Length: 238
Image (cartoon, rainbow, N blue to C red):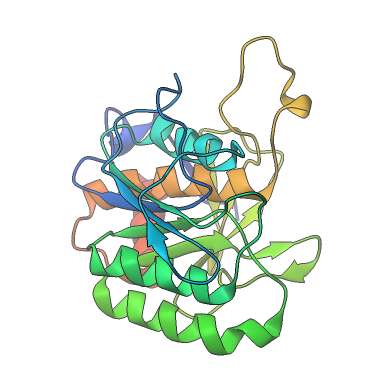
């Protein structure tokens, strides 16, 4: 059987922008004024000890690149920023849980987590918050595996996991039984070879989120992983 592929500029997706879909990007914030970023709907910053503040400035570049990859595909989506990384790409499971809860309370349809942890001890913190997100209608999209290790929260029941597929273009995704496959390349930077730019599972997640936003525009009633995969399968068949 041929793989189920959904391409950005083909069939029902042609001309779609993700309008009406709200996305929380849980990462290192966003760099205001970056040429690859569109309008943002504000957000929150959370320190590792759980305190909140309003400095969303990205000083690592990761969150900006992730957001740009999403907005490239879904420029009409309403993007909220939850900054959980500050001086390094590391935070606590409880801070991630607070950010996911914030996304659900804000009514976001999707929470993009271009990250993951292989530490199974974090299940006791992360599974309940994924369950709450499902109840609120927020789909958590995150890395399913990395270098052969399952990642949390992307491999948890209720979350939609993403795997790397370097053979895919940035403008298509492949649909698996319970995961999506996507390219690990972000938006290109003029004059910088793709292999020297940021790349990897983070951007596979972002590319998948952008495509999911387009599907949710077409299927506004879709809720949860099963509905989203079914919507994508319908698009692939079309």
